[in-house]
Amino acid sequence: MESQSTVTTVPKPGAPPTGLSRTDYRGQDGRQRPPRIALFMILTVIVLAIIGGLFVYFDRSVRPVMIGQILKKMTPPPPPVATAVAKTEDVPQLLPAVGTLQAVHQVTVTPEVGGSVTKILFQSGATVTAGTPLLQLNDKPQQGDLANYKAQAKVAELDLARYRALVAKQATSQQTVDQQAAALDQANANIAKTNALIAQLLVRAPFDGVLGVRQVDVGQYVKAGDAIVTLTDLDELYANFTLAEGERGRVAVGQTVRVTVDAFPGRVFQGTITAIDPQISSDTRTVKLQATIPNKDHALQPGMFSNVTVVLPATPNQVTLPETAVDYSLYGNSVYVVRPTVDKDGKPVNGEDGKPALHVDRVFVKTGDRADGKVVVLSGVNPGDRVVAVGQNKLQNGAARP
Image 1: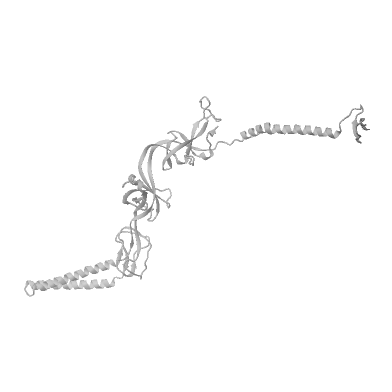
Image 2: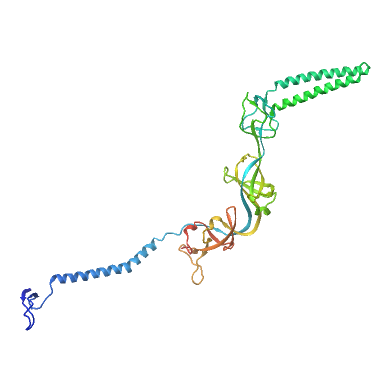
């Protein structure tokens, strides 16, 4: 056991008195020993230092290795992609433009003379042929005049025959015969004129076509030139469009055009250029062109907005890829070329499934014209190269398929 003793320090001779005393701890053997609290603190510091060292060792050595093993096991499978092979083919040159469809034959049917409508002889939207009666105006006064002139003509004809017989017997003069012949001619002329007036009161279709919506009613009085109904020939339509003056030397009458409209997405209507305006607009610096489009099923209608593409002679031996295979960016256009993976000796490497391992290389390319979903590649890709056509936005340069 330990015993506690108080020791009073006696100052040396000549030293000033301190007036202090200290308590000392000694064992049974009389040796001095440190207090318990100091020993506890020393042990605590040693334990904390060991724990801190273990934590640092774990954080810098063990933890990275464990994370790497976990991430290696969690590596996602390679993203699925679709590939295409670069081909050499003849590529048509296309000149895109916008235009408007116009009917080859389209009129608003109007009467030549005024009158009251007595009969409507058509239905709105009906298909008619040339000469079909459409509208009857009141012609009773003209019919009465016609009957009168016919009677006059009959009397004049009888008088002329009678006077000719008298001339043969020298019972009358030739002048009288000539006057009766003139009277007959005058009566026939009045008949012809009245028939023309009656024909004007019966409005007919001027050509084959489809009628629009009726704009008159029975009993209505119409004047000359008032609209009755529209008539449109839909068998052929014009596509009117413009091109920049710089393209004038590349187009000619007879070239093929392709027309698409929003009403029938995916459907292409074929036609040919039939007219080119001989003048260039000084305001827009464009040239007007007109193409004729067959429209036997009457799908197209005048006034439709249309996308017109002029098909120029094809350019031979062009390397083409699907348009979706090219990544367009400010830094340049590029594609991902699929190539076999090789080791340092240049030998092909097989993947985990036993098939040759593949990887992709990002290659910058120069592109040209586009047509029918394909793009011409002027440089960067050779015929036969396999490139990623779909899904390349998930790839990086050098990405591999294990």
